[in-house]
Image (cartoon, rainbow over all chains, first blue to last red; front, side, top):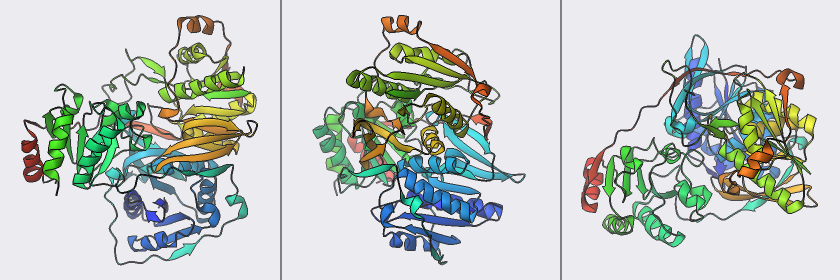
Length: 323
Length: 251
């Protein structure tokens, strides 16, 4: 039996959809092992996030709500997770892989002397033991692994688990008592650069349009990639090449060390298709590549390839797709 | 000031990963190994701090077998003062490595630790955060800008998060993990390589550190994921729009 704790992620009071993939994972593993799962929401005035998580079959939706938890400062959040895991005795603590969970969960795991697996894409039980699959080497290798210990920490790849669907059950919301020493911190949050509003996050969008080396500057990126994304109601992304050259911010980078996306439609515009980038897009349903270089490796994985100059093909495509 | 830079030997990022025929491991024959790129960025940042603030004790440390000496020499050639190898042939997971590094930290007492945010072989992205927890000190992960403030008692960091650039000021000592945009690591120069040969490289048996590091992670099998097949080439934008609308029904 494994009781599971799912760490919910939210941004400005808005639940990150990837959390529902982690809920789906927990639900499946709890059902397989005869256990239950709880969901933990940490933050300030995040009661509404907890409310929104009630219809997913959790035994409890736990709420750690405090003014000192307004920003996700890792050591503070890790101590809250440590206290909750210790007092309620879970077998697994899990979250959807993101910079939020990557920052906080390993810290909480070490506080509890627990091992951790990142980027889990599958789990099943064999002779009473949980066996996991996880990706390594930029997605080029899938390892079948076990993790010893009574408590295991995991992050899951959201693309590998269909988001949980709301049911008719309503889980109770249980407030978590917080001790002052959980709320002190080694770090002071200094704010976040305002995100360009209006476009969805590439990890949550149905369509992602990404630009690569063929895009010469930030203006062209906005005009070509942004314009096409807007015509499709999609998100924008970027290859590492554009991040390296300062044309796009790192938060747009898709790939092994950036975001992992799995939209219904991924348009790779002027992207050659380095291993690093392919690691981040291979779970997309349909991949379209537009590139001048007919030998670009991106064409080996694209469902539809168009050999063309992006500076002429993209405006034409955008014009034809505009609603 | 003393900065500890943990580094890892990994297959070169441009190497195509092959598996052993029986799936028991990743093939290493004929594979070129290099310093984990994110660790090179961390070391570069330490070197730049030294250039700005004056001479420092920059120590590179790695955990592994004899072959790891080659990687430590790269760190020395880049400009680290000395190197430390914690010798073990065991295949260790993140928590085990973090425990070893915690013992190294206690021995070396650095002002802070700079390391890569993740190793490009296992892609775990855990060791820095675990090390910070074990030492009971602060952390700043995915850092793309680093500035020492308040008489070098704090580090003001810009962090690359999914939601955008965050600022975090962390008390030192702390663990700081480097992201891609922090800097562009320097190339190792020939004089650097010559000098590196004379720099101190200490080898320490794991047992001598007084740590029992056991990996809880056990890899049973390695597989190659199913490859996507190349699809069709279209000739025109019109044909692409038609395929997306009527065949893939993606728009």
